Length: 381
Image (tube, helix red, strand yellow):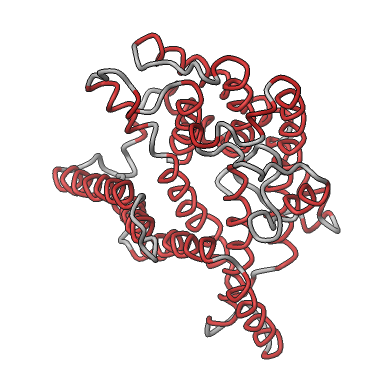
């Protein structure tokens, strides 16, 4: 799910940069309409990211319980984020310098209505203050996203969810991770302050993130799964859950242009993903996949974070250098071209993973104050 979500985000941004929108296309066939729909699920894919993050990161906090350690937790989260973020900020700056010399109108906002995630008019900012704000995850709160890398907005959301959930757990749990009354009171004050300062959009996304935590709790309450192959009931249940998941995506997509005060579509999708995680996949299902397919899926999942943070400046460079006002009409050739450029984005993501992200455990050990506090790491974290 994580790997597919990252691919859909990249494909959506890439399609907007190199192909005309569906409304401007000339007689698109049904296959092209389906591909437009598929590559238009970028926002929904980010919501899937949030649910998975709540399941994995929030789940690790619940699992630790009274053994939760703030220092270990901070080391794990910051090493995970900064090991990829800092190189991708540098990549963004380098690519932006190329675009500033070749097509400065792209960064001044001329193509924002077409490319959607491109810098809006007058909003491009690559100053040192904005750089530091992005390093410390206050983009969209105190500073804009750095340079052309619009998807960095979601990283600020993730960071503050990582902060809020253990603080809230400390306050609300009957056995609050070994905290005393003063610590619980301080945590409550910080949470109250955060909820009064953080933007509503960020807090709305926190509701989606918490659905991942709910999925973890529900998953633990399920009976131990059978090790046998899927039965007729398993197949029927899986089909029903896939239907719920699809309905959640459809409702989220339909509700996106609605001017509602609350993001009902995002929350409905979050609940659908929660149901899918808990009930949708039989444990024996992936064991029937060919080994090469399992390896490919696992690797795309492993590099999904690097791919997500590195892809958009590259998309901007592709659009600025080759397309601009000459975006392609949908055809077999244009979709194959999109696949070729998507391969380049995967190559860049793989390079960033190979150079930086795969060394996250080393960075984590370096951040640890003493060797005995080395934190066990997994790719899922």
